[in-house]
Amino acid sequence: MATNTKKSLNLLGTNIAIIMDGNGRWAKKNTLNVTSGHERGVEVVRSIVESSVRHKLESLSLYAFSTENWSRPKKEILGIKKLIISAIDAQVPDLIEQQVELHFFGNYESFGSEVVDAIQDAEKATTFSKPALKLNIALGYGGRADILQAFRSIGESIASQKIDPIDISDELIFQHLKAPIKELDLLIRTGGDHRISNFLLYHLAYTEIQFLQTLWPDFKEDEFESCLMDFKKTERRFGKRTV
Image (cartoon, rainbow, N blue to C red; front, side, top):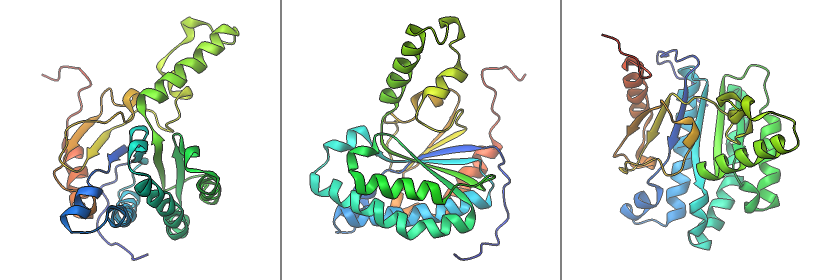
């Protein structure tokens, strides 16, 4: 891992998420197969994680595979499955060196036992008492499904009289959601589309959102840093009047 001497923006306590869109279009644009696009996308993740550590983010959450993505061709899904395992093998040593704590969330069990075992081993290997960054990977995830399962779990607790309905709060709902974050400060979407695609729906209430034309495999560290600088300049009012 190369040492980066650029100055840190010191974004302590900041939680950022990225919808990494455009791998397939990048591959088509460069006359490559779609798996090559996903492989290039994984390399971009490495540089963005390093930048996130340097700028002292609290967490970085990446939308790797949605519930809707299961409708893609089987060949593409098989390629993604193999890529998950190879990416874990290749990048976990760097994550350990940087003290980056890795978490996966979503219905990734559908990828099979080999992927589940690799994920569990990676999460154990990257457990730190004070991580430099929490890296959360959404795999087989959907925001609506996450909210539904949380409400069902809360409903079961009410039915068994473990909790009273009056005790339902944001904090309680966050505890039952699979996504391992609470409030989200900034959402970045690459690829040119202007939608949130069922990602972290409950977490986005007061999130700043930046939509970029850049396809994910072309997303460079300098552009990520520009997003962070724009966010740092933003006056976040949370519905309050400032004048």
